[in-house]
Length: 158
Image (tube, rainbow, N blue to C red; front, side, top):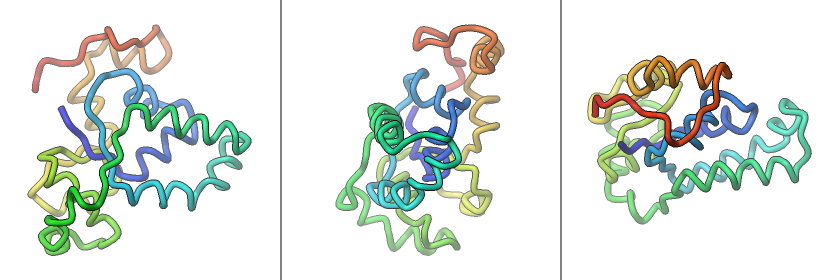
């Protein structure tokens, strides 16, 4: 299953070793993000380093590690859906994410509620993602009760 990740999801994965980071790096879903995301992430680099109490080298390491699991999509691959996306979503900063999802026939993973106002693309918050795609044993593993690996099963709902 494919998901376009909103910047807030990647920021969450960078800030702490959270459910979000574990889902991205352990479950084997296909994750994508528009190239615009890298610019946004770099704007918050100092904030992330301060909040996480890490140095810039660790930030770069974490970002590179996360990007091993997230494919960066160049604007050329979704630019044909930008106009359509501008009509579907109020927050124009999020147009690249919607256009990318339309182009890839993908879902969106975001914790921004305004994505849900459009009906073209299915949007999951982190809580919704966990409830829909993780079995109870997997959820406990993500909480740190057990080891979570790529071999852990994902619900057979999709």
